[in-house]
Structure formats: C-alpha cells, structure tokens
Amino acid sequence: MDKLPSEIIDLILDQCLIQLTRNNVLELRLVCRAFDCHLKRWGCYNLTLDYWRMMDRRPQIEALQTIGYHCRSLLLDFVPLRDDRELNFNEQLFRYNPDMIEFCDTLQREFSMHEGTFTESDFLDTLGQVLFYCRSTHMVRLALPFPMIPGHTETATRILANAFKALANRPEEGSEPLEVLVIDLVPDISLCHMWTNPSDIANVFTVMAKVKNLVISYRQSETLPEVVLVFGASIWSVAGSSSCLETLCLIGNVHSSNSRPNRTWTNSMDTTPDEWSCKTLPRIKFQAGPWTTLRCLELRSMNVSPEVMLQLGVEMGDTLQELYLHDVWLMVDGLRAHGEDDAWLNDLALWVGHPGRRPPEHASWVAMELRSRMTALRICRASSLGYETYVDSDRDRLADFDLRDPCGLGRTLAQRFVEVVTGCEGPPDRGTGEPVKYLPADASHDHLLHETKPRPSQVVEYDTAAYHFCVANPTSVWLDRGMHEFFPDKTEASAKAVDYFTSNFATGMQELRMRLLSEASREGAAA
Image (tube, rainbow, N blue to C red):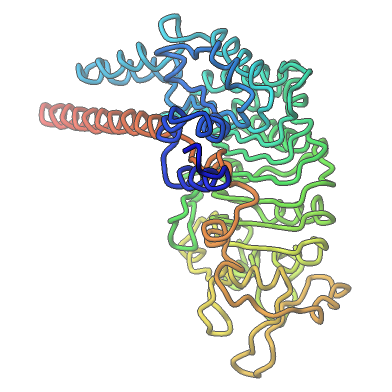
C-alpha cells in the first residue's frame, strides 16, 4: 500500500464511498493510516442523535472530542416517540382488548419520554453537548414524532422547542452558521404553541438568522379559525426570519404523489366551508419577508387557493427564479356558483385557463397571472396538478375545468401550466393553425404574448418529479436523498417502528369495530 501513489489511493477510496455502506466505510478506516485519513471525514460527515441512542445508550460524548470536528450535518430522528395523551387515549379505547392493553403498555414503557427512557432535560443537555463538539455543523435535519392520532402533539412540541433552544445556544466561538435546516412532520398546533412563547420565538429568530436552505414538512389537523390564523403567521414568519434565505420547500400532508384522478370533491354535507378552507397553504402574513434573497420555491403535497398563488407572485415575483410544484391542488369553491351555469364554475379558478380569451372578472387563471407578476422567473416545473372542489350538488361534479388539452396533443395540465408560465410558444390550433395564446387578465401585459420561446422537448424540462430524480434537486434534496453526499440518512428503524405502531393500531380498531357490531346485533335481537 505504501508503494501506491496517493492519487490512486484516493480514487480507490472514492469508489468505496460510492459503492459501500457507511458502516463498511468506517470499518475500512482500520486498514491503514492513509485509509483512516481519507475516510474519517466522510464517515463522520453526518452524525445521528435519535430516539434509539437516547433510550438504550447515551451517546459517548467523549468520542466527539476526536471526530466532532469532521461533522458537517446532524440528523435528529425522533419519529417513534409517542405522546402521553395519545397513549392515554389508546388505553381507554382498547381497555377491553388484552392484546391491545399489552401493546399500549409496551408503547408507554419503551416509546415515551420518562425517567426510564429519557426526559426533556436529557434531550436538551445531550444535544447541547453534541453541538459543543460539532461546531462545524451547518446542516440539521429534525424528524419529529409521527402521531397515530392527529392532534396529540405535546411531545413533538417539546422536542421542537428544545431543539431550537439548543441550536440557539451553540457556542459563538468557532461555530459555523446554520445554513441548511430541514424540519420534518411539524404539527400545526406545535408551531402555534411555540408562537405564543416569547423565548421560543427568540430562539427561532436566532437559529434562522443565516439559514440559506429551509425545508418544512408540516401536518395540518386543526380547523379552529384562530389556530389556523396563528399557524399561517408562524410558518411564514419562520421562513421569512432569515435574511439570506435562498431556497424554500413547503410540504403538506393533503395528497400523495399517486393521487388520482385530477379532481377531488368535498361535499358541503360532510364539512363546513371554514373547515374546508383551513386545509390549504396559509396566506403570507404582513410580518413575513421581505423575500429579497429567495431564488427557489417548491410546494408539494398540498391544497392551495388561487388567492395564495397570486399572492406568492406579488410577494416573491421580483426575485424568485425557480418555481417547483408537485402534487398541488387548486381549491375551487363551488358554492360560489349558486344560480350560475356550469360554464361559470368551469371558469372560476384554473391553473391554465382557456385559450383565446381573457378570464372573466370574477375568475383567477393562475398561469398568466404568475407570468406577469414573476418577472425574474427563469425556470418552472410542475407535476401532478389538480383541483379540489367544494360542492353541494352532483351538477358541480361535472366541471371539466381545463384538464383537456385544447390542441389535442395529450399534454398534461402540469405541462401546459409550465409552458404558459415560462412563455413558450403555443402549439397550432386544430381549427385555425395559428399558435394557441393565453391572454392575461390585464391588457397592459399583452406584450408578453410576443415574448415567447420554444416549447420543452424533454420531460425533465417541465416535470418536477422527473427533474428532481434524474437531474438535480435544489430545494428538497436534503429531505429526499439525505444530508450526506454519499450515504442516505438512516431512518429505516424509525420507519419500521411506525409501521409496527400503525399496523397494531389498525388491527385493534378492526377488532373494536367487530365487537361493537356484535354487541349492537345482540341488543337488536334482544329488543
């Protein structure tokens, strides 16, 4: 080994990094000093502080004295942690099922915060010590507990608040500014609780001061108007509190990437208008911003109102250069169509609009509005766009919106949206042969109709999912592929734990349902 040039050794080890797992790479450090020198910085590039380490064996803090300076990213994975209120609810729900009682006891004993596992103070102290020795850390991913029952978020709130407190209290001397922050599975009520505590708000502002890349995956479950209002103010204030934010990714929990078809309906008999409108991306509040440094925005897995989309164009239009939409559904309030014909509903709120005519006065056609407002936009990609409609009759379900390609080319709604937003020349009309044009609402922007470019020829040029998978992901790569350049974040144990929780919970609910049906049938027979 001593006879090989260092350049060849480096090439060999680079291939090891690409092909082997992280544990294998760490074992290779023991081969010789050259291997140790080359591989240590990559094997220790990302460190993990998770539920399992906190419960079974506390991290060996003294080991960080020799490897801590290699750490650049930190994964805080507490997805399996259970909430006390959730556990109490399960115990009451399954109190007549011996198997489920044992399951609940296991959760209480092994997957909740108490003296037997670890406490809130233990978490804060341990994270503080890790950050003390890992001062070169500039990327952090925090995965919060995943609730089986929405609304039980006290444990998630405590983890989130203490994580921000520890990050805010990092040693000033020698600590790298935090540039990448990923917060996964944030409950809306947790942000609301933090936003009523001045010390938590101060910690958030301190941590966010130099963040350049922010990813927030949130879960909306509350429908009270006051909670929704505070949640909207808090999530946009967190994002807007950075003076150098360059990329922002917001991920909701409304749809999955396999959502079909492109239209869904919510019946007014099942939910109130306020409850329906609460499950959407909140409006930007006046305290947030300005967004002078923001270059890339991604919205994923959410409902969004046309008013919010147009507000994004106003607030970020001067600087935003890249827009990515994936699995985003435009909300259409069908109750506004009372007394009108079907065409009125078809024109109410559209991603693209109809060619050759301006939108009616009451309507919002998003694509051309964004093109006229986002003057700095260079790149737009979208996939899986659709409509979520609030209806009270079967007539409203017949709305086709603009889902069909008017040129007969079979283009998806997302592809046509991208072509209009980016100013691509329209394909020829089937009747006249002239290029199809989408008119802006304001005639003063008609000059945009003459500022066109060729249509995209490859899927990666207009499709968000394809571009992120095959080319690059400037907005959410830290969540999708991990914080490490070579190795993905190790979250398999947490995923298996959540699968174990949900499968047992589903089995218990099925048995409870069968028992209730059996009791109801016996009571009916006795009557």
